[in-house]
Image 1 (cartoon, one colour):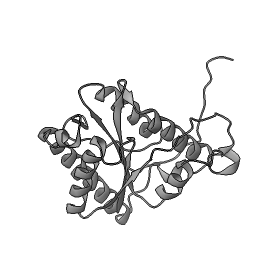
Image 2 (tube, one colour):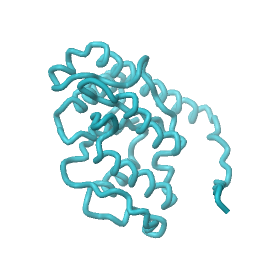
Image 3 (cartoon, rainbow, N blue to C red):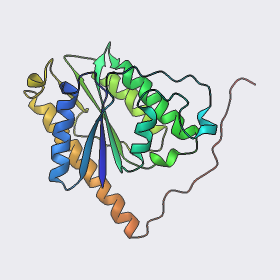
Image 4 (cartoon, rainbow, N blue to C red):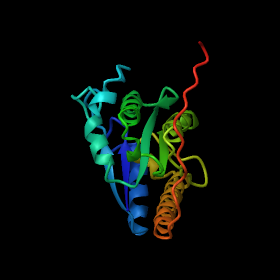
Length: 212
């Protein structure tokens, strides 16, 4: 079992990464493999809404990390997306990144890459805007039929620098609790499969437009 942790901060070794490293360390203790994926500093285009992904099976924009990530994600069983707070919301880079990752996989018929796999969001901030950021990121999971994993508080850490984040003892404890809950959920899924528990019944997707 493997969990992919996504660092959506422009700082590879900043506050968001400090929270993700605490999660990764605890996952290792729980016997779960993990990897931190940094989306990097190169520009990430927003979704063009062109619909080309329905035919190509991937995003038509090929000069950033989105398609690379989609291919990588196939081999993981759970996901944690981390973002710093920028203007009381998730960073622009991870917003563009997740818009295209989730839209391209769904529209191209590759939704199984994420469907029914557990996910969690983590936010880091100097002071405020964390709950709005978590609300924003969690919506990607709920539209993709992904169980949302929580800690015992909202998944956030506070600090202006990594050293300050390491002083947020409650925040780091919650990262560890989140990691253990993720590990538990993955083990439950694995046990369910071995016991023959069927996956949820699927229905044909219905779209309702309110303007005729």
